[in-house]
Image (cartoon, rainbow, N blue to C red; front, side, top):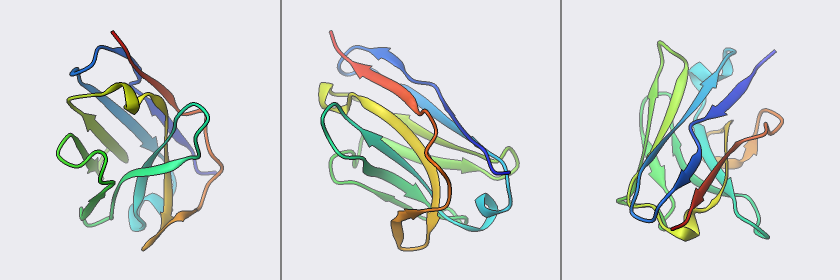
Length: 120
């Protein structure tokens, strides 16, 4: 049974930083890309960043230069370092394993995610 557990969210002021963690179990994590997604109030879930098993990264235009995705294959964990946070980054953040070049095709049910709130 694969499990994905997101953590690290919280309340932060604009311009602040947070680091999210996605702890994964299961063999799929070792071989497929893992993405961070977010769903803001009244919005659809969107892909924020993704990283392949080999470490190749892709970012949404809205977070380029501010967010960094990384993975630790020993710890089976994917991280999302978020800097220069803006109020529009406020959302519930989720992680999931997805098909290569198809980030909307995920392998697992969505978890509860972790809430990120950017506000003064």
